[in-house]
Amino acid sequence: MGRKYVFDFDSTLTRVEALDVLAEMTLEGRSNREEIIEEIQKITNLGIDGDISFTESLERRIKLLNAHKDDLGPLVTELRQKISKSIESNKEFFEKFSDDIYVISCGFKEFIVPIVEEYNIPKDRVYANTFEFNEKGEIIGFDNDNVLSQHNGKIDCLKQMNLDGEVQVIGDGYSDYVMREAGIADKFFAYTENVHREKAASNADYITPNLDEFLFVNDLPRNISYPKNRIKIVLLENIHQDAYQLLTDEGFSVELIKHSLPEEELIEKIKGVHVLGIRSKTQVTKKVLAAADKLLVVGAFCIGTTQIDLEECKSKGVVVFNAPYSNTRSVVELAIGQIIMLMRSVFQRSSEIHSGQWNKTAANSREVRGKNLGIVGYGNIGKQLSVLAEAIGMRVYYYDVDDKLALGNAVKCNTLEDLLSVSDVVTLHIDDNKANKNFIGEREINQMKKGAMLVNLSRGFVVDIEALVVALKSGQIGGAAVDVYPEEPRSNGDFITGLQGLPNVILTPHVGGSTEEAQRDIADFVPNKIMDYINSGNTVDAVNFPNIRLPKQNKAHRFLHIHKNVPGIMAKINEVLAKYEMNISSQYLSTDNEVGYVISDLDKEYDKEVLKALKEVDNTIKFRVLY
Ligand SMILES: NC(=O)C1=CN([C@@H]2O[C@H](COP(=O)(O)OP(=O)(O)OC[C@H]3O[C@@H](n4cnc5c(N)ncnc54)[C@H](O)[C@@H]3O)[C@@H](O)[C@H]2O)C=CC1
Ligand SMILES: O=C(O)CCC(=O)C(=O)O
Image: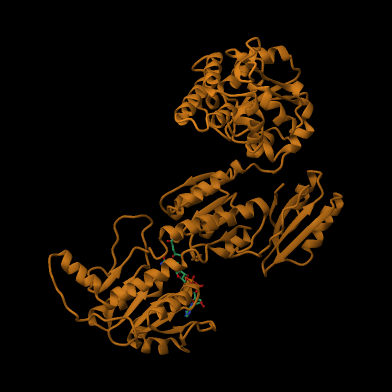
């Protein structure tokens, strides 16, 4: 093609400005170090944005630096650790196109050459300044005759190089852009992986958030087939900021929305989205999924997943992850707290005193020690609650549809009625299966001891609210703590329930799992699952999909193929691979009744036609090339 690639060094090939790093090193121990560093950074930026002449910026910085020849070795060592992430991961490009790659920098050859040589860029293709030293080896200036020490020196430098073919400049600063503005370069790519400079970005032919994107738009060899910045993630329902941070740090384009979206709005929003993050409110229905043209993953940043049509997701090759344990402890602690508060009628006493009434009484105030706690649903939450409740002296009874091993001294009940009839407090921790609708209704309430308490931290639809209201008014139930409701609002604001205003009723707005700890843990767990799937194809812990984990292979391509689980499909996939003479270095298939998911690691080079052929294999649901 005869195309030439001209790279800037500071904040482009490396994540930092080298002179700033040098300053941090040379000013070590100085009392005014921070102020000087700040001043140097200010001057650097003024020079980069063209607000002061570059020569002035260089002179002023060198004076402040107080550097010595001996500092340059450690500086190079430091810079080696600070190569831009996507530059580091795309060495293949620098190998294959080494004859066409140049560095033009207003930095200094003394530290640029040793770094870029490792990327196959020899010193004769590095255009940069050189330091001047005094007899003691101190850096006292720079070679003033070098055009790169002058304002807009990059223009003259590139002109003198007289390169053939199309010249593309990749850099973060205004001084890179001016080469295109002067008509010497053909295209300017504003490189924003490390810093987004408005002046450079607004003048660019193209803004490239990393080298992956640059290589993608130019169809050049690259480490990953689809740049991460092109992967669009939408996080709804006020998901913890840490999740946003993790996913943006990984290079994805993430949008954070505070509330849930109703179906019609989600149908619009989901178009072009690769990953959707939700909590318990957002309904991911068939209609939503029909509009989801790019969707790869749904992340439920909670335990429950019945708000998602898991089967439809699977049939469309959309993998769903949740956080099955992150908020377990938070729910358990709230349950314990609520049980104690109910038994002591604390909320009534509190409301009285809030309204100016002193009512010191022991009536309806009991210890939990020695009382019977009935746990319905002996899963992750139920079991942990069992242990904590015993530790504070409660006698635990439990009921579960599955055969669950009793922890500690807990007593298993064979029927729900057995549990209800013996418990002083009944607490619900069954899962969010829709079959559990009105699981506790009038009949079950009447099977409870008179005056017993009811706690619901599972799902709102599990309890018939009207029946509960009647029982609370009649005294059949002595008090209730309710965290979840059949209908919950999409965002904070007004809310009405028949339970409002009743004595000894604690109402909370679905906050069982809403603690800093739980939300932080979820914000770490789910994004890691998402990244593992996007980056490596791993589906371990997916709730609706065959689970596979295959270690990353070097010098291989990875193809992901999701298909309907029909006889002979693997043979067809491998026939295609054989036809295109691809050597399989490892392959892993996992299936369930409906779908099969196979990861194939293959030899380095491949004919792009193979991708088309694999997509066309009958019963293919989704196909993706990772690298
Ligand atoms: N309030 C909140 O903020 C939170 C609420 N939750 C709710 O708590 C539920 C339980 O969470 P985990 O313990 O982690 O779930 P889990 O799946 O570990 O346990 C649920 C247990 O309930 C049992 N079960 C289901 N239906 C039953 C029935 N009809 N009768 C008796 N047992 C039945 C299951 O066999 C299972 O052992 C979640 O599904 C979710 O709905 C979870 C986290 C936070
Ligand atoms: O607070 C949330 O996001 C929902 C908590 C919950 O109910 C769950 O984890 O299933």
